[in-house]
Picture 1 (cartoon, rainbow, N blue to C red):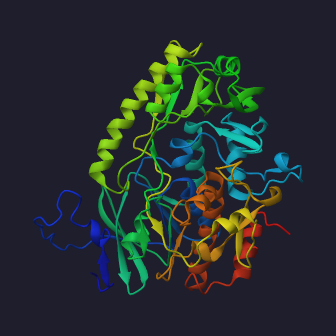
Picture 2 (cartoon, helix red, strand yellow):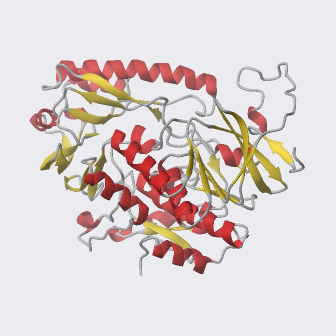
Length: 476
């Protein structure tokens, strides 16, 4: 096609679709597509993708971001409860407090603070053996703020646009196919970053991957007409509180912004109902009358790349959302008139495809606090704490080679696509780690484009300097 080599669509095992295995085919006629040319293309405008595209553009790269939804944000705005974590676990270990993720990630928080869109880094007063701080965000303000940052940085933002394929020249990506209501287009670039969460670009490019299906999927709701203070009283009256943080809420400081509890200590009807719908007790908020996230989990029998099974899961999760509201209205004081004010447009995942990269971060790397000669960031949080914690309240490093997609010359991966071991992934998949990976991958992609080199040919010294100039923190 256009003399540019093979055009690859979805990975081979998925081309027939879940309902057409061994069925009939339609031969789509070839046609000429309009071409746009960039230095860097970032696929996916979620947690890592926003930062990757911003970082690449700030390095001077002509950058495009392709996002299937109408706004940036991803798991930050739809799947989590708070942002974990900008700090090491200092309080639990009695060690030096330090903010280990900075750069563009912190800039997002600073900008949100100016518009009342975050609790700030609220220190945990209970449950600090899980995380030192709780950083809550207003999901809608986050969408606006990051969208503005992308545009200000000069990113060509393509929302409502589907990544439909990769144009390959041997082991090198020459371009991607994007499809929107404006039609199909080819985006050529020198370097690419896959931040799709599902690993769509890597799969289209022929990279090796697996689909572990080792997490439940989720669709979180925002619950309005509620009181987090009365929810706290409800938890406290049953001696159930396990996590508590106070920060900025509705313009006032020292307010409850995060709360979690042991469901086993709550009334039997509430406890059993929550168990049946996979509802977590934890919530966060930046507003007096709003629970920003109530999570409903559902374990799919197959990978969330299966469209037909996802359709069943979408319906099941929405049924669970309705039951969650009923539980809060029946059992929790201050929630008698609660209603759903926000849902995600589609279910969220913790892992889709696992992409094979040049290095696979191990659980020992995480827990032992290992650093590498090509660290691109450091991180100090584990989502399974206190069962798993980084040694001595320290940090471990994410090596650059862990972001390089194996077998493809000019493709990097950032976010929940990397790290095969489930328990290690329970750290690397978290939002703030994805922020850091995004800044590293976007910066590296821009440098590769400017130096006209592959991702494996980039001098680490150049990458390290650019990251330090971008206020990325490294352990000395």
